[in-house]
Image 1 (cartoon, rainbow, N blue to C red):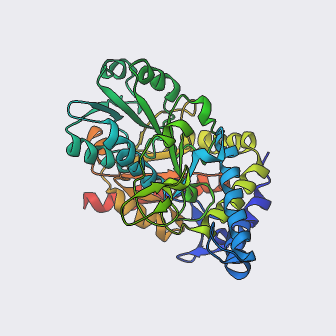
Image 2 (cartoon, rainbow, N blue to C red):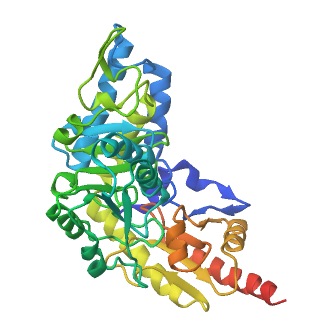
Length: 412
């Protein structure tokens, strides 16, 4: 069991007021809040150890380098990597996916080759493949989404062919909360000799990852969604695969030798980390991993399931409430996108904000999925480890009030 009073005390922002009301932060799928230990880690770095890494001859540079590489090792342990050399730090999950699409994709994808993705992908795992397909003449193939928010596995199986070069798939939908059957889909891709990239941005905050056993070749996620700072992303790749890839960006750190006539590149993972990284952010991400480890994944998952079950039951009692995605917590997270009959989702968000309830509205960077459900946008409530059952009820009451006020305004 999580000690919610203690946990909430660890997050300074949760004590603030929003529009004069106690804050109910229900937008963690967009970005999580940060515990004091993560915030203090940033302060400590810039107050005591601020220096560039890997090349300094002075003590502070060595301190920063050690802390940075310790964070890499901790990240490797967190995701079940075989080696810290399989962890590449980027700015975010989006940059990590772009790195693969450009560095691996340009070398291995050609005219008529196929890239399989799904209709539920975030733009971060769609636009880079669109760009690659346009550049190379490859073809994008989409796994359909069923009305219940799950992938159509029968149609998925028929999409793979000997021309399939990559399966790029969200482990968890940022809109529907659906946990996709990644091992089953990875097996389909591997039968055809294809590579697999998992967008783990929504999975990493909620359950322990074991990437070396996932069957995938790459995975990407962002620190800011699991209690870490913004500006830090992670690309995991099998070391042999990364080692065979050319670099994507050029500059400092990613080279071994440079002359006027030739360049030799550094070994992985530094080959893919051109320039000065967000050193303080990476070190603070290590603090976030320590915090999560102290809570325990089983306890966090159990707590989020309690919240999810309560939310599903309570939201179902609201007239005009339409849920998108699975109707139970069997294979989903506590991320709920919805529509209120006759009410614009942006108006819902604004009214809930006035009541101290922070949610997300819009297309959630998933416009093809919006088209699949024939809506321009959805309202989204997402829960995390620091949320409470009281906040589930506050959200439900706020949605009921929004329906009453906005529904009447729409009829007038």
